[in-house]
Length: 373
Image (cartoon, rainbow, N blue to C red):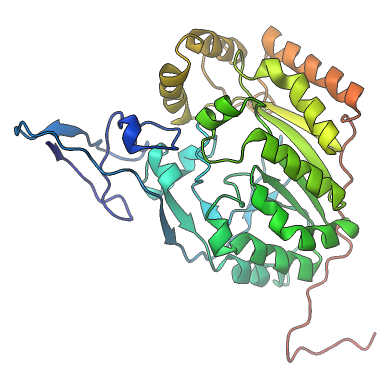
C-alpha cells in the first residue's frame, strides 16, 4: 500500500506519481502528472509501511465546465497567419505527447502531463459569448482560427457539440474561419462547412504526423489513425471544402523520413495545399517528450534530441520568432528543401484561397429595427 500526498489544484485533488504504471494509464501518452511550473510542491507516492500490495485505479477522463467572459483571443505573434482564435475546450483527450499546448494547463493549476489528457474543461457558453462579441459595435472582421491550441473535434465534442454550435454562429454571421484538427468528427459538420466553403468562408487543415499506425497510437493515442485522417481529407475535398495536409510536427530521426510519403498520401486524398512544422518542446513539454522517448524509443532518443539541439543552438527548444516553428541549421534546411521539392512536384505548393471578409453581416434579432434598403 502507499500513502499519497494530495493538493487542491483548482478542481479536485489529484494523486501525482513520478511515473504512473502503464496499466493505470491505458491510451495515454504522458507517463506522469508532474506539477506545472507555477506550483510550489510536487506530490509523490510513498510506501505506507504495510506490506500489502494494492493496485491504484485506472485513470479516467474528467470533464468540467467553465463559464467564459470572452472566447475570442487576440494575439500579435508576427510569425502566425492569424490574429484571433477560439478554443471550445481546454486540454485535449487526443493526448499527443508532443502537443505544444500542454503548458497552458499549468495556468489552471493542473499538470501539463496526464492532467492535460484527462482533466478537460468544456466551455458550453462559447457559442452565446461568441455571438455577443461578434455583435459588439467595435468588432472588425478577420478570419477566426479554431484548433490552434486544443482540438475542437476531440472525443468529448461528440456529446457536447460546442464546436458545431460555434460553427452555426459563424455561418449565421457569414464570418470566415480556419480550422485545424486531427478529428474525423469534423465530417459530422460537413453540411455547415460545405455551405460556408461555397461562399469562401472556411478552410481546414488536417494534421498527419506519420503513416505508421503503431507509431501514431504511441505518440497520439486517442487521435484517429492516419488512414482515417486521410479519409477525412478526401471527404472534405469532395464536399468542396479547401483542405490542407499538415505534416506537423516533423520529428527528426523518427517521422521526418516519411515527409514525402505523407504529402503524397495527402495529395492523393484531395488536399489542395500542404504545410509543415518541426517538433516544438516548450517548457514542460521537453521533459514529457524525453520520458516518452525513453519508454517507447530508447534506441533513437539520443539522435532525436541531438538533432533538436543542433537546430536550437544547443537547447531543446528556442522560442524566437520565425525560427521556433522550424529551427535553424543544416538539418532544418534539409527538411525544408525536401518539403518544398515534394510540395512542388505534387502541386501542393499553392496557397489556399484567401477567406472572404466582405460578407460579414450580423443577422437580425427578434425586435431589431430592420433596414429599408
